[in-house]
Image (cartoon, rainbow, N blue to C red; front, side, top):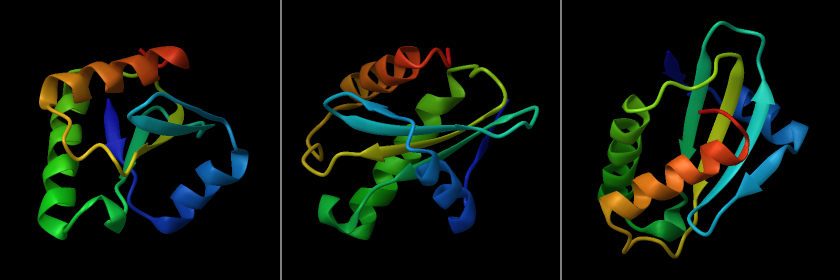
Length: 106
């Protein structure tokens, strides 16, 4: 079961641990949270596009997240790289899965 990270202090805790990996589409920060669930947060900067574009990609990422059962007990922050506004859904999903497999979350 996954939840969405929303509070800035939770994001800052994950960033502080500096457990980072990534691929050409995402940068992923990871931190153990000692909870029975995994919480995931998405970051898309203003450099990526206007609010409509950023929210479209956040919705897509939440839909993709529903397809995976992540290992419990982690906080994950996924940052979408700024030059990927052209990426289609299937490539976004493949990259999402790839970055999660790198750290053994699926």
